[in-house]
Length: 180
Image (tube, rainbow, N blue to C red; front, side, top):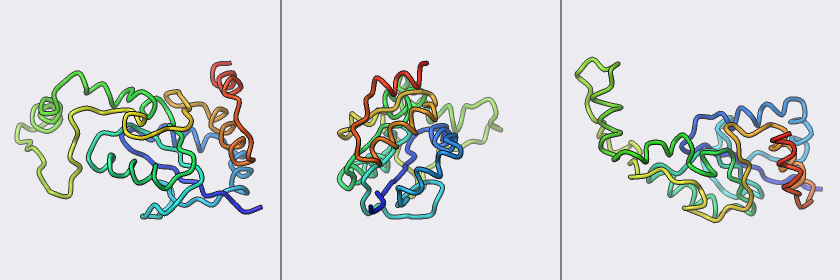
C-alpha cells in the first residue's frame, strides 16, 4: 500500500492545533507509517504540490492566506478545517468587531507597550490584512471539521486514522472522543 500524502498548514491561528496534532504522542508513529508529509510548519517544504489530506489551522486573515487556501483546495483531495479558528474564525475573528484600521493602529501605534514611536508597517513583502478574518468555509469547500480550541488529540487521531485507512469516519464517534 502506498503512503498517502499529508499536509498541515497554519494560517491565522496560534499553532495550538498543531500542538494537539503532536499530542497524539506515540500514536503519531502509527500515522507516520501511512503518510508522506508533503507540507507542514514543522518541516521545510516550501511549495504545495499535492496532498491526499490537508489539515488547515487558522482563519483566512490576509491576501496571502486567501491565495494559499485557494491553491491548497485545488491541490488537495480532502481538506480538513482544524480547530475553531478554521471552523468559525474564533479568536482571530474577534478583530471583526473593529475596523482594520483601528486594529492596526492599536497594534502598532497606540498599544500601551509602545514607546510612542510606533509606525504602521508598510513593506510590500508584508501580508495585506483583510477587513475581516473568515473561517475556511467562506473561502473554499471544506470536507471535514475538527472543532475545539484546540481540538483534542483523540479527535485528530480518529479522523486521520479513519481517512488514512480508507474508511469513512463516523463523526458521532469523533464527538464522543472530543466531548466525552
